Amino acid sequence: MSKIQMKNPIAELDGDEMTRILWKVIKDKLLLPFVDLKTEYFDLGLKERDLTEDAVTYEAAKAIKRLGVGVKCATITSNAARMEEYSLKHLTPSPNGIIRAELDGTVFRKPIIVNNVQATVSCWKSPIILGRHAYGDVYKNCEMTVNGPGKAELVFTQEDGTEIRKTIMEMKGPGILQGIHNTDKSIESFARSCFFYGLSEKVDVWFATKDTISKTYDGRFKEIFQQVFDKEFSEKYQEAGLEYFYTLIDDAVARVMKSEGGFLWACKNYDGDVMSDMIASASGSLAMMTSVLVSPDGVFEYEAAHGTVQRHYYKYLKGEKTSTNPVALIFAWTGALAKRGELDKTPELVDFARKLEKATLSTIESGKMTGDLARISTSSEKTILDSWEFIDVIASQL
Ligand code: NAP
Ligand code: MG
Image (cartoon, rainbow, N blue to C red; front, side):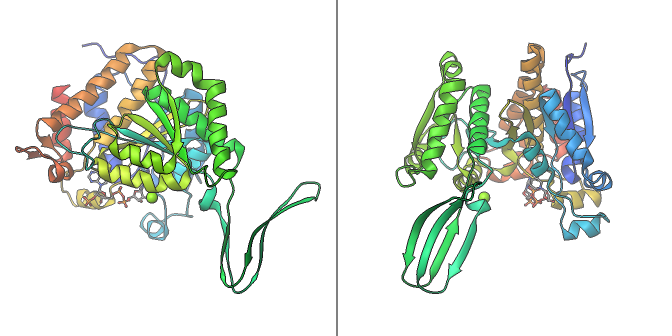
């Protein structure tokens, strides 16, 4: 059988622990036998990041930007315990944080749905993709406690020294104060990434804030989203038969719970923090959730939403064959390959990616699955497989 050809490479970012082990198995069994895989490889394993003082992470981010598509394995974010475990020279920042900043991107999480793992919310039939704005608001706040009466003011000193002043509150006694901000530039990037990803996934985009109460702050978010949409996306959405829908955050929450899913929900930073955990846990399992970083100029990096599954890795090191779920890692690869195929106009690559996804889902739906899914699956007949057996079944289906 001749292998499927790729016109252009994708950036491949290898990672740590159990996901690094599975990364290789997935490539060997599910990709290399079928695709003449072209990647630019970067080793983002913790040791290599430490040795290069993160240069490898910055190079990888540059390659993703240049190639337009990347796929990333989960990586350890170092802390004091890891410093000792890996004899690190220094604590390095989170690689995901570095790449997100380099790409000015937004992270979208998307559940992978199978018919024998029921979402807690029974009306959800299609995935709800959640996009969280990852800059500013309460996450970059300035706050204080005041011990007695006084006047709280909001002061903005312009570059020429002039001041704009507003009274927040004449405090009659002790209390608390908080200052938050955001920038037009960051909100615009966020809006653009959301509209790009909505188009890419062929789903409507919902956005919601509390602009009835926060007329200026949240009002600005609403205004910028509408401007970006009207100027850059409305025609493309019309052509694709998609829409952009704005509503109040409480209305959005009520509608989400009664919806069938199948849309992208853009959330402000705090809403996204809270709601992404709700969507993830209500959708089934962390191991069935992909994560995509999308830059405002339409560059895509795919990964699993879970971490390096450290606990399983220590078992693996003791010689045990673990039943770690590789589905989100497989879908990171299929997402990247399908996007590559779409950009390069190589439909056979897109087709391969979709077939691999189908083979993966139908394996689970036939009752063969890893332990985490067996615990929550509604199938009456279940076979629990270790990761290697599970991947072998997918390969034979494929
Ligand atoms: P984790 O790797 O997400 O795993 C937490 C637990 O969730 C596991 O112990 C396991 O539960 C379950 N789980 C997650 N993925 C699974 C899978 N594919 N199959 C089966 N079960 C799965 O989080 P962590 O152990 O707290 O973090 C480990 C490392 O990952 C940390 O060093 C952290 O910095 C890093 N991390 C990286 C990323 C990233 O690169 N995107 C994201 C998050 C965390 P049971 O043990 O009960 O089986
Ligand atoms: Mg959270």
